[in-house]
Image: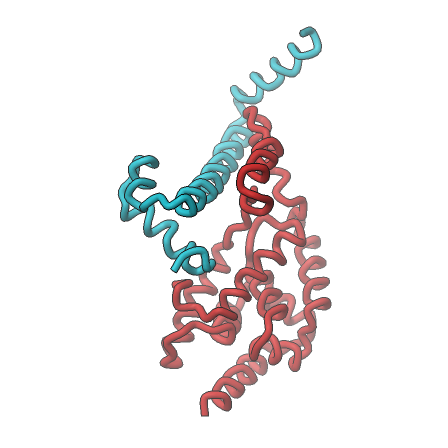
Length: 180
Length: 81
């Protein structure tokens, strides 16, 4: 599916992973996809900003909501501790991997998509097909997030006072205008 | 030596911990570590010019499964045409 993504849509997904890592989360949830979109150039990010989703505020709300929900922001320390309990030293593996392959190549734990984020990606593909488009762009990803409808991303939007129906209309209107 | 013994004993105790939560959590973390190591080493092999077939042979899996798992990812991240 990612092979159908446009360059900017790929960058948005990469930015989601960066957002997760920067906040010390070992997963990529809908909230990180939203942050990735807000951080990436192009129409989806512009529409988000117009609707009141500024990157900084969205990040703060995300951190607040996840902290409230008791989600660990420890960079996967639990997984490292679990490996340490069976005698595996992740720090040492990291050191050797950085030495052999350069920093950043080995990442543990690499953030993985949550079930909701996976569902969002499936819905993103569906939104793309329904619109009769071939490539999957950032705007489709935003529509996919809104269609998923229940992730932390929606809670962040609600906390920022964004009405999801209006956001969906705004994205679609902008896409139609650009296509004509 | 006396300082190391308790640490070793503690470690052995954890490896054989009877608490399923501890053991299972280690299994999950190990699976994630395995996936990450595979990714790093497949990337390295491709950069050194290995074919998908030779990587598959070394990993003792089919060419198709290694290709499905890694080729698209590498293309998407711009590491491969």
